[in-house]
Image 1 (tube, rainbow, N blue to C red):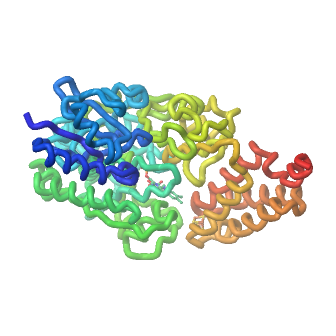
Image 2: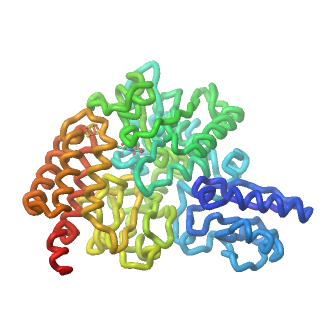
Image 3: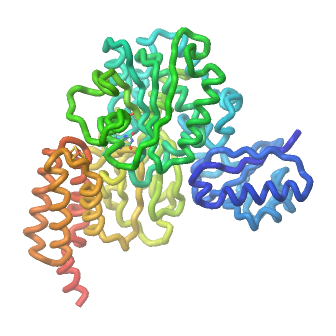
Length: 518
Ligand SMILES: Cc1cc2nc3c(=O)[nH]c(=O)nc-3n(C[C@H](O)[C@H](O)[C@H](O)COP(=O)(O)O)c2cc1C
Ligand code: SF4
């Protein structure tokens, strides 16, 4: 049998040198006259070990990492192709604790299969959900998704089944499925990883959504900063079309469904669903007032399902294994699994898919291994730039939509940024306001003007100008933004700002700090 070597083509791995490693391995094979197949797989999401090279052996996959081009010769000398021992040996990748502790449902194939091989996809359980869906009534598909308890993974956590039912029940001659792959939140990369590592699962999820709601056309709106994901999705759509997974007769059924890939132009607010629809229609990315809901009047005024990549990519396993199977994972009203993305100043950064319910402390200290600098963790921002900063005191909060909301926080797209004790929370609060000012679409006053006034007021606190009065002013301003903004960009910017003020008051008394130091 020809040996198979897996070298991730995922952009995270490429950023860490995977391309050079692939070239070095190809050159070594040629020089040594060895025949082997190189598969450019996705990443398993253990980024501190990338580039992680794997070989398929008789006793399963064996991993090595992080591999540099200069390690390649010694890896071959150590018997790379038969899983020989080397100082970079990691053994069976699935037994690395970071991976072994996960529950991989949505990411089951990511890093395992050849992302553009439909045969490999099917051999690992792919298309089983779609095959079931084409034999079901649309109403039954919607019911299965509702039963699963799946909630939108893009940020708002809205029940996916209810959204689909609204589109299903709305009569129109044309409907659309729009996949939100704008992934603008800091510390997030789950959408990118799945599009690059297992693109067919998203295609399958979108086709199921189309059949369930009566939509025949889907769009994937991908941020332009993701060129590898755009290429992977375009290639995978081509493969799926040629194989009859997409097209006028999905898997030979009477259902038509096709997908187009569109690149965004790089505005955070274009991740907001109505702004995204404007952008898809070729207009400026400005938020639309709701109602009408996109489910009733969305893209080009037609009923539209707009879902995040992970929401849609979680659907195939739900259809395959049933709503109850998925619902059995998780806690409270947060059902199923969530791909937690651990980033920032952390030792073991990467993607960790698990049922809802792990505590924030477990995620940061045990799974993430604490900070990369080795200093104490001071704060953790959960949910991207609009998420709250959590201090250690709140590390017992379980990863659950309601539990986070009860602590004035949010899960968002499940990105976690870790900060050590050198972080200045006043600067972080200012950054939140500045980010809002830069990314504001400008439609409503509390966000457009409030964010700029917020930056100015925080600057005054930093300069020691009437700190108490200005802290009260920032609090007042945050209330105006929270309750008066049209969308969550202006409405949620108060979360990072107020959590920084409330949990780290010392950082907002620079004058006092100065005096204490003297
Ligand atoms: C400023 C802003 C940015 C957003 N960015 C994204 C994004 O990048 N990706 C995403 O899926 N949802 C994003 N959302 C949430 C979307 O508006 C919407 O709730 C989501 O796409 C719905 O899909 P879901 O129900 O599957 O989560 C953003 C919302 C706001 C207010
Ligand atoms: S809150 Fe900001 S981004 Fe949202 S509609 Fe208002 S101005 Fe636009």
